[in-house]
Length: 506
Image 1 (tube, rainbow, N blue to C red):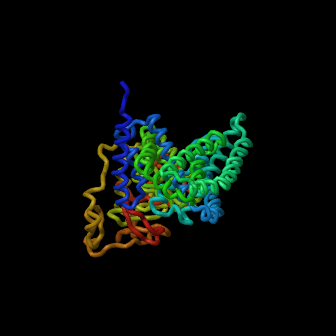
Image 2 (image 1 turned 180 degrees about the vertical axis):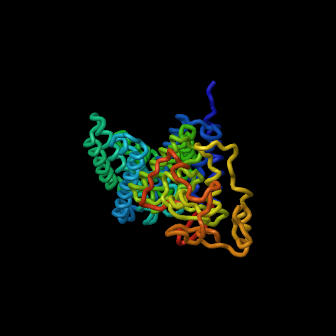
Image 3 (image 1 turned 90 degrees about the vertical axis):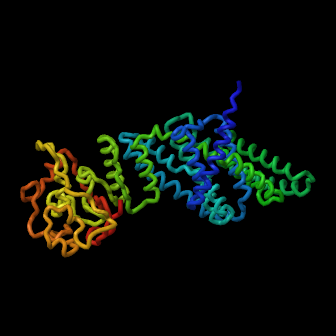
């Protein structure tokens, strides 16, 4: 018996994508984000209600073709020409920056990988989603504006440049692929499209003005022309079918019946094809095949996409085994050195701090208790809270029946006392501690402590006066302290100019 389950899949996709699109719109996000999330929710990664299929794949391909055809119909050719230089510059930067960043990430992550392998990863990062750009611009009402034309043109040029890069890499590894032939086909496509557009645009305009057919037939013929030219672009010239569809729309744009044809395509796209296309993207995501390293690499790549001066890493090694943790830290240090990006590390793992950081701040209840160099904090701790944290760390050098935790409970950071916030848990408190709220005080150059008893005499650790031996506590830890950026350990929030400025809230 023939299965009609695909009908149920389509109905479910249409309903859920619409609901999620409405939700994302309520929070001022593009509705296309909701459609992508709907596909992720319905797909194998979460609920497993809809499985990717050939039918959905073909329907989604039609969806993106019609979407790009509609974008071409709405594009002002004159405005597109005016934004040509800007679009090319944007596209060039949009290729070079991700290419360089992706190559660096691949080189760090893929130890021992070849130059071509790393370049391939970088090339993948250059890919843009023209369809998402078009849908977002349409939703914002910016598709026909100069800025919209510049963005759309840049996305199209970006795809062409990415195709050339990919062909260049594959031809270098496979002699059967000729870069010259690919370049000739791309050039031929644009030459043929330019010539055809010049002659067809006028012919289409005269035909539409003279014909006495029902206007609905123009919409059908226009859509057929879209599919035909998308096929020609893909199969004959090796250019993406969506580019062919876009230029097919350009040939018909500004004609008498173009507005009506676009309205019909909009209806078809909105009601069926676009939801299926964007949901299919989410359906293809398989979170189970992604380990923590891949996900973290993706997050780092997204964070570095804008070339930030500061990268905040909040618990980047949580739930990772020791081997993966070491790889992630090595990657972060290598990226820091290569790109010159400062990193703020948020962690509770003192071993990571010893391995990665050069400055650290210990924070309690939203206030900095102690800050300074890693050597100051590990070898010469002054604040009772810092000392308590070290004393609660298990030691392999001693037989200890019970660890010594920091006494008491963490206070509510929203209800801090007028005096020292650590008073209730401090083993060295005196009545004087309740008479004032201490401020960060320098006990040595670059070393600040928020305690009225700090600096007078060295505090004791484990019952013995003197400094805490750094290497004894963290034996086996590699100590690579890079000097090109600030690293911060904290578990709360605060701000002090002497500690390098802002410390972010966890």
